[in-house]
Length: 266
Ligand SMILES: [Zn+2]
Image (cartoon, helix red, strand yellow):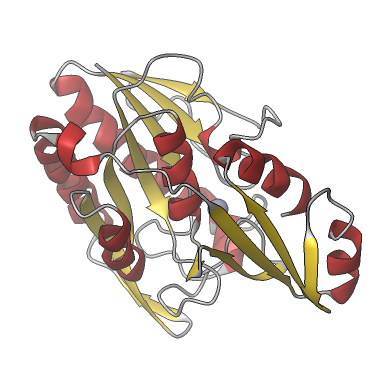
């Protein structure tokens, strides 16, 4: 059995401030290591059950996970291949049986995380079929496009709650609970233990039935930009309709075309 993990950093235990997510800042190293530990907690549980694992580092430079500190069962995708799968790059390199997300965060326009955003901070909001879209939602649809169930998520508590609306059978671990510019987290080691314990449960369950997401037949994607000039530029993408000074609409039945659109204008 093969597990694909997409790992972000803004949903790791205790992280509250953009400095802590950015290479070169004094506190970044600590959180890059905690991100690595949380991914490793999933890997430890999965490898104990005999799974092979591919990890996609999916934050910023995509070179955050410390390779020598990562659980030895994992193979790591570092850097950006520049393909439309983006944070899920590598998912088409093998036949995977399940997807897991770690360190994920609430969507732009959500109060659940001081670092809430969707793909980029230059976007005010992204809506898919009328709902504010998180990276979890976007990437779960990518997994669905490949017919792979999404079995596990760790990240902020608000995202974990909203994830169950999309995939009721998913197993989640809240690494922190955001409020305002603050967050509450249990001890990072305790979060990692819980991630391992719950991953083991998730992979031992009947996840194929419970965690396979049906891809909608039609996608209506609304993107609002913070900067009107970005909206003007991206309105040139084929098929995009400008709704107002800052908002674009793209409609398509194919999720691959949605990913291609987001690849160029998000
Ligand atoms: Zn990130």
